[in-house]
Length: 126
Image 1 (cartoon, rainbow, N blue to C red):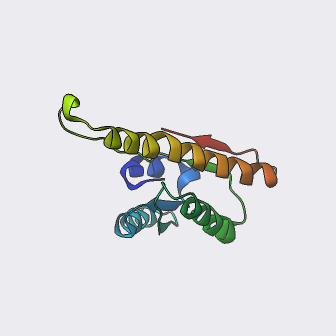
Image 2 (cartoon, rainbow, N blue to C red):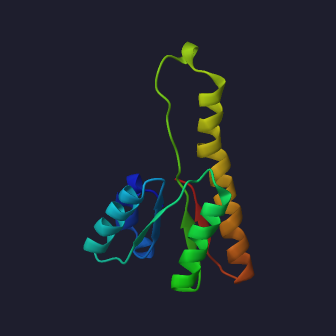
């Protein structure tokens, strides 16, 4: 769960004890503090979603803390700004990697954990 979707996290009781990941440890921890102030119990974790091992590590930290995974909300995303005609392919591919591929990797990791524990949980992408 990324920092920009804090309102969603606070609105749903099932999200009140999340691991909050962000490429910035400061942003992740800031969001975790906001959730804790609202009555939840969150932990911020730095995680570059382009790095599958960092995603796996964040998931493992959650499993070690809570023992189970019932739901996951993956919403990594960026938006490039500028003139469409000036956009280079590297920027486009980076956007696809973060917005699509990283989310797919996260869903795959979460689904594998849920299947292993025989969870009836859900994955979400806002």
